[in-house]
Amino acid sequence: MRPKVASSIAALLRGLKDPEGLDARRALDLIVRESGTAYFDFLKHSPPGMNYFRGAEFVEAEEKLYLLLIADSGSSTIPGSEGLLVILLSAEGRALDFVDVSCSSREGILFSTVFPQDGRIAIHRTCDGPGDRPVSYRILLWNDFDREIRGMGDDVCNVGIRGDRLEVLGK
Image (tube, rainbow, N blue to C red):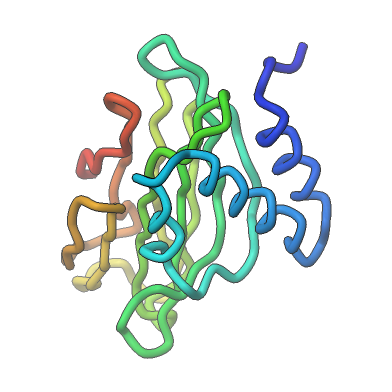
């Protein structure tokens, strides 16, 4: 049985069926506008290079239902960057937060694994070469921080949901 969600979330999910993602982007813009004036700049701070949506997944955390919207992005200031954007939305149709992780496209492709049982998102990197050298990643949270980290291996970071916000938990 599908979860009961706001009509704006249902429109977003229907919009994801559009191969170009235009309907989903319009629905996301509407959700952000309807979230109130505090969220007016949400998408202005989000990566301008949101390329396409990879999908969406419902998760439960802290006894609440959320929708995680996953998209490719190109937000990094690193030339030739590749990014992964996770947008947190409430089932009631409010934009809550986002995290964008990026690295040089020469270092591989970023992907996510969502654990719906606890609302955790693991962000990984695939690469053809050895994972035994440090890689620079940029992590951007809406209205929180923008930092660069260096890491080894394919596990970049874990992200959790705490108090209607996304929180970087480390590896």
